[in-house]
Length: 326
Image (cartoon, rainbow, N blue to C red):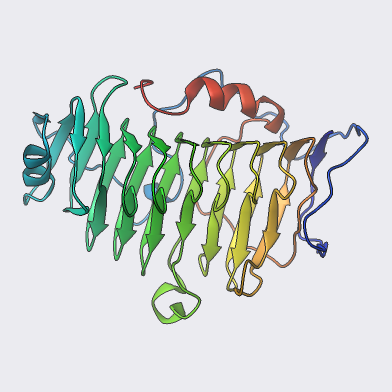
């Protein structure tokens, strides 16, 4: 089925999984929705979304780049004080979760830069950029963000890890996760780790997820607790077996301009034992997919952004997401 969703808060209660539609329905976007918005033809490498807020995200800025080729070099540079631009070359095997300090840019060289075995722990830090790296076979999380602000995770590949690809939790705020590809993996993007952590998380966990390619991954695209508004826009969901987006614990999630293909459950409220959050969906495009569940209201988005027409998102994202584009 191909259709376009312009729902803005009407609740549709699901009974188990949403059934796949059997017929094809043509729908026209409301005149005020995407009128005048340009269609992108290639990946953007500019920062957009929540990581532009709270003072902005520049990482290591103009610091002289240093190239690392082994775990010792990577760890010493990303844990050093002061601004660093760290270029990852080749394959680096880490053990466990290795801390990333503030004011760091970690960027892969070419299309083959790889971190395997362990992951990056952005903890009690601010102003961190992680780009153009293949993360695979991690033992815990590929990237964990906690008690941190102003984080940009962009143009990476995530595959075959043990737990989450990108977990953002514990009072973290003002982050953007953009132009990444997740494949051959189960748990993608978790936002908020526990239903009982409201005292730290309410008023924070504000994250933008845009132009990511969820390529046969299973769940958490993202799974959200408490954050409001969380902005999920212009992502491509293909052959997702579990669910797309879940809003729980009074979160507010705007699901906007995404392309869902062969996704029976594109978005819903509540997940597992977590209570319903709020979810507003608009201008999404569906191909052989369910209709999703919406309800409640979401706070307004405070930043400017260009929304690609949902019908173009598949071609834009598949040609621009992942490594080797920078």
